[in-house]
Image (cartoon, rainbow, N blue to C red):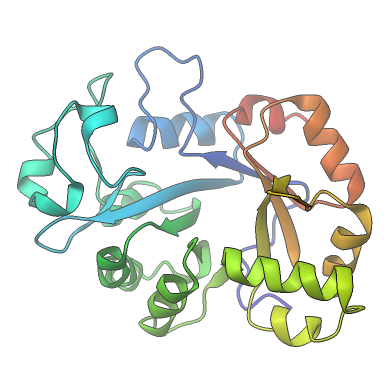
Length: 251
């Protein structure tokens, strides 16, 4: 059973990847405007990312450097929050803090990917400061970062397995007859997966059904075509992470 009521909404779960900016004039990814657009288009969850500034503020930003979105040859971690907030995203939005985002959307559920080691403490602090435990899911490609963030929280939050956990679970399913699966999934609520990872294909009905039997949800990213969304849900996926929340919300 889930540790919180994070997954209380109906299936399929719909996650707006970095908010919703696809084809919308003037909307930047991972901006307050993108999150508002996602909610307005029916998103149940907002998928986002955290980096940390040099003075220890968690900001909502995907890349570790500012070149792609701000045209600045610097890393997020090298600038203070005050310096970060003088920068503009391509359509004029500014980079929000995680606290600001959680406070701006008090009823929204966020799926937070902790992108760097120095973002661990600020991300946990933001969740604590806003008492947002019941409405966040903590994830990370790095199991070390994920576990370090969870350890700092005073209340349970939903969490998804890192890629290391995903591979261990798949190996158990594929080659070990499910040996150890209950233990591997005991402390996670979901796996958030690509359709394929190298030679491994995670979009497999038996795999998804087995995980569902262990109360572990599967969410696939980043799925933008309706046909593929429907196919994955029919296989047994619980949710879709997408740039096209306008499509996913109408499945």
